Length: 244
Image (cartoon, rainbow, N blue to C red; front, top):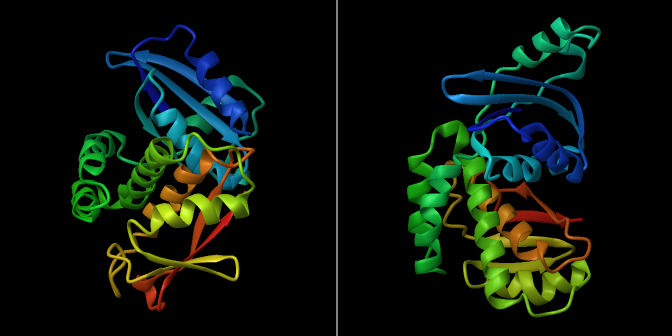
């Protein structure tokens, strides 16, 4: 992970704590300075299902001006036997696009203002970001929107088990946006406006939305949603799985 900040003091400590809090181990790190600010490169290891959660937490941290992340094969990294090896390990990873945080942030007020009629804004967001940032940006927009809906409509309730939270919170919330059904432990979305046959999948928005709307209601607050089938690849319905 490559991070740009406006100042060096305490940066590694603050962001390192965030890495650990999300269940990851900080393997290696490097701090450097140039005319843009302080660069922090971190190599971390942890659960794949928590990757996007960690990336969002880092990308939206108030110390972070820009954020990039990439996956690295363990065997491809040089052994950390010397400072030179650690430096090469950090610099060998080409950054991959995560969510376009600024574009998502600029879209959120429109989503809140027009909710639940948000699909035109989401389609605008898809076109406004780079192609390789599209899915991650949709997921971030979904997570932020879901968290906002939870705080607006459901935050006064007690903590629930996942099954009850899906029934009492996720399903009523999602029915404002789409025709949905819960069958055999899976969420079915009919005729998703974000997933046209033969086009790009928009299921990452719904995955993020579910994680956001359920995250505050379920104890512990760790919910994962992933797409199993999508209309864009020929399925009759988009089908998502929710777990924690």
